[in-house]
Image (cartoon, rainbow, N blue to C red; front, side, top):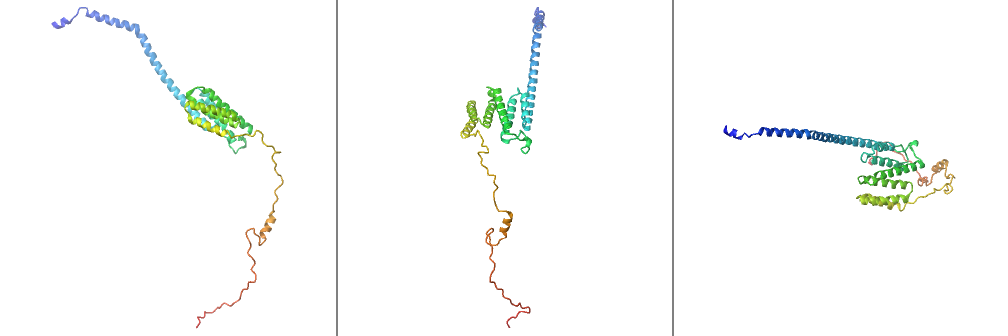
Length: 275
């Protein structure tokens, strides 16, 4: 009892009351700002999570549409995907490249993209093929301009440059194709893609021996005989085959001459055993 009384300090209750009052004052002063900061952090975290999920869903949907358009092979469908997802990663560049490839391929197949080679309506004339080559060239250049100096998409830019060179070859612009391939090889080596550089240089080697005739020969330059080829008639052939002794199928066997056949009696009774 004496020890407990010795631990009692005069004014201790007032000191504790003053501490509680200071804490309450601090909460009243800083509690609301701290609570607002916590709420802002929570909202920002939730918003960031929602945005990431939304971007992931948008990215997945864009690639689903891109794959479907590539399977269909329609340049119009591919270009529509490129327009709708222009800001979604490299989807726009990939879709535009695929559309340009489809136009470029028509110079080889001679039919509209996805068309039937046996259908007269799907076949292209020379003017239409040239228009498709020009369209492919413009789309490849559009990809190059859109990528610019973005190092993350340099591979797509190199593919577009190779496409430009291929389109220029189809348009018989060998000098332009060589310039494009030279620039492509330089950029590819600087970007760390030696395989692309080697491919561009190999194509330049092939172009050195290519020459195009600007003027095709007309009918006056090409002499074609309209006289039918003379030959034996069917009656002559039949008469020839009926002749003996001809060497059409080899010499005929000679007629037998001077052959004498002996007549003799054939015994009808039992054979004589010689006794």
